[in-house]
Length: 84
Image (cartoon, rainbow, N blue to C red; front, side, top):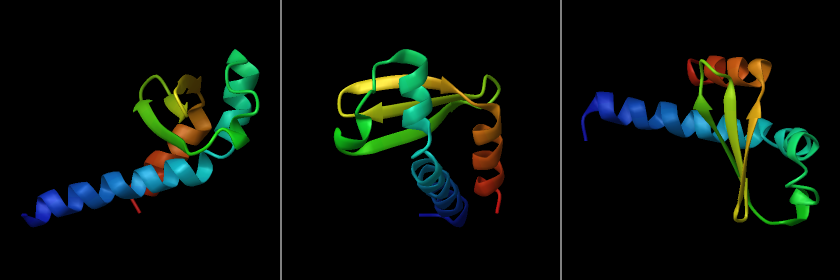
């Protein structure tokens, strides 16, 4: 595996870890916006990732549910974290 590929993987992994770390706040916002994820904290593993940076979209997945949240500040923080 070349260095550039390794760096790309680590950057994506770091961004994913940051998304999961700060994504803990996203289920509440997602639940408020859509009502789909009420009680999401007890539903099992949660995964969040930035779907579209330009549109400030974060996909939050809990169990079999996926909700798209629009949060400019969170997307900007995740992008900054991926550059550290």
